[in-house]
Image (tube, rainbow, N blue to C red):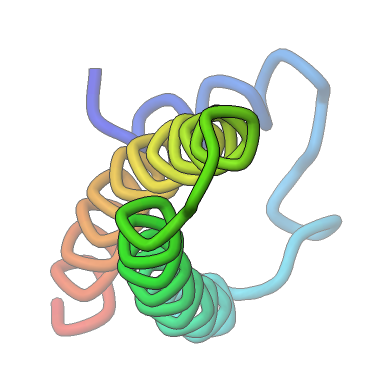
Length: 102
């Protein structure tokens, strides 16, 4: 099931009619904005990971290194989740662009 099919299925199940929703062009605009914001999050997380790895390598004691390892794990988990969400968002953007150009 594509992201657009899922979107439409959820709307139907929850009885959200076209009259209750924004036009497809507005949905596309929103999805594009979400993609842009997620790209910024990816960039921030990559930066945070880079700094955390560097700090861990320079840490003088095991407790500090362990704290950085925990921080790195958290950032990596967030980055994977954001990456996966960005892939789905970009898929939705592409599908909505197809609808809009028709």
